[in-house]
Amino acid sequence: MRLKMVGVTIRGGSLARSVGLFTVLPAGSEAAQLGPGDGVAALLWLPAVGAVLGAAAGVPAGAIREWEPHAGLAGAVLAVAALALLTRCLHLDGLADTADGLGSRAPAERALEIMRKSDIGPFGVVTLVFVLLADVTAVSSARGGPWTPVAVLAIAAATGRVAAVQAAMRGVPAARSSGFGTLVADGISTGAVAAWTIGVLVLGTLVAGAAGINVIWTVVAQLAALAVAWWLRAHAGRRLGGMTGDVFGALIETATAVVLIGMALW
Image (tube, rainbow, N blue to C red; front, side, top):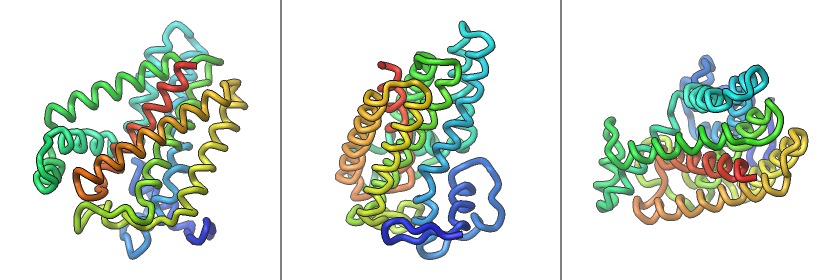
């Protein structure tokens, strides 16, 4: 199977690679090796994969709200935990590492060295705590029917991953000579970025409308999230000299949290 997206052709095998790279699900041999262009093709599937993961993660929250509405907070905790587990905590790890690197205020080379370490420093811990608390609180506060968390998390997870696609746009360099950031940085055309940006806003409109959520407020939350991610990408690029895999994770988690907070404020 092939999918043509604004000058970029991605094969069905790229979906398997995307699932294997970015989720806990097995994807067989398709995810085993990354050849030239495979990282970019896998990244182009990521928003779609994120929408499915977000919807799946929202099921526990919806089921608990349907069964016992007063236990919405417990359902939100399970939903956020499910999304973290489905993604192998990959993006949360990137968020923590990026917070440690940027928070150190060290020169780029030293900051990148800090981000490479397997341990988590104080900036990473505090950032994780605040982001996860924001996610849980926002999901538990989502207004609407019992199954609203499914829609909210699908929209938020897809939007967060579009922020990663935007960070791989042509003209945005990699900060290192190796790693996932090197495979995808400067690799996605402006047209493909625009297509995914419009696509995720359309997704937000359709899903919010179907779930009885205010459509305008949803799109505003998505735009705010992408704007915050854009600023973070620019800041990380200035500080580090380009993108890394950790920065992609930080962008995903930050944009996802902003969408959730924005939709909770409706």
